[in-house]
Amino acid sequence: MGDKQSVNFASGIYFQDAAFSDLAGQSAANKLKNERTFQNIVGYKYQFSGDLKLVVEGWHKQFDDVVVQPNRVQSYLNNNGTGYAYGADVSLTKRLSQSWYGTVSYSYMESKRDDHNGQGRYDYTFSVPHNFSLLGSYKPNNKWIFSGKFRYSTGRPADVYTLHSNVLGDPDMLRYSQEITEINGRRLPDYVSLDVRVDYNVPLKRGMFSAFVDLANINNQFNVNSEVFIPNTGNVYRVGLGMFPTFGVRVEL
Image (cartoon, rainbow, N blue to C red; front, top):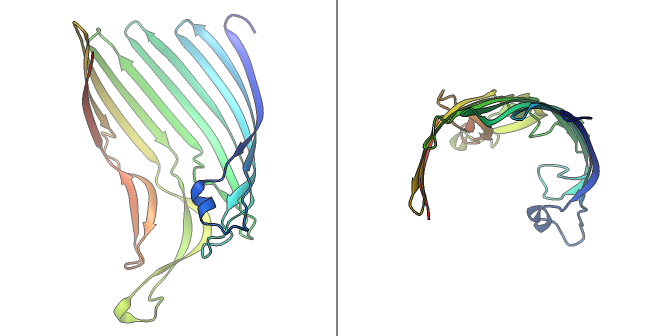
């Protein structure tokens, strides 16, 4: 559309092999088909300058022959699952120039699945409607790089359930159970993380010495990734991470 603007479009049908773990658990008579996805994407790019660009994209996917488990008791699987997903992505990116670079991006998406087992449509496990990130980096010279990143996203879906106590009817062996009343009908807490990083590079006569310190989630919010039900207590154990520091050195010869 000119030196600064462009439009792109893509469409395709893709087939995905069934996972080896799914195939291994089936009888010889139960053959699983490849899952199929029909997807489309359209995008627009505007180049404000040589180091600054805006990209906007919208996409849609239709899923067929999805491998699903009809119930949680048997290991039998079939290809009755269907679903769809759609969303949009917006990003503004500045390449490294005048000692700094950065990017700000926002994504919106919805993803639904239906196992066709009588329980209806539900939010897919990785359906996270809102994602926002802000990244910036400053390079004062060839030795030092200072960078930071802020990330926010909607919490992942989780099941709604009713808790039942003493399901064995034995007070000396107390056990609890979950009765799932709605698949992915609620959400885990939102994800929020602020990361900082420092890189140090020193040229050698024959190679390069590099070191870095990366502090992920310095706000130390415990970001929950999933939940595990404990039958012995009836409680839920939340899996996730708080602040996570990493560091390292590298010598290139």
